[in-house]
Amino acid sequence: MTTKESPTRRGRGSAAPGVTRDALLTSARDEFARVGYGAATVRAIAAGAGVDPALVMHYFGTKEALFVATLQKAGGVRERIAAAFEGPPDMVPRQLVTAYLDLWEDPETAPTLVSVVRSALTNPVAADAVRHILEVDLIAGAGRRLPPERVNLAGAQLFGVAIARYVLRTDPLATLDRATLTELLADQLGGLLAAPAAR
Image 1 (tube, rainbow, N blue to C red):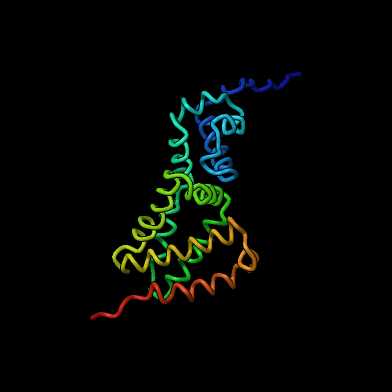
Image 2: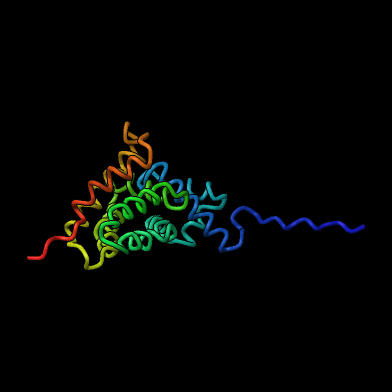
């Protein structure tokens, strides 16, 4: 009779490098979302990943670099926004609203977005991330089809809705059904994103 060997257990902080790095990124994402960048500590992030705090510095060097890495790991944000600007112009407002709300409700991207918003008003690293989303990702997604100021205004409106619905959770916006919210926002953005008449 043969017996199955038990897998070798790794000690605290001795997991495979890729596993450890991913665990730290997940823990950091959750901790930043919970308390914001300023209040998050390397010790708490390490504890959440079940590793020694020294490994945070080993893999990322600084808390700031770890924060940036969590944004990069969220991935797909720019691509999903850019895709919303494709197709017939009259469909863009609805597509943009849908893509944006999807990002805030996707378990892979929502915690990162929450962490950025909660940190943005008190920390320059997070503030830069928000500026990047509003000034670069949205405008780059629109390409040259729309004036940048219109796209930035649309982004500011979407950003405000996200804060009210997903961060502060103010009613009735927080409990408004998704279909109704999409209709309302798409109508609002329709005017902003309508291609200007040629002069």
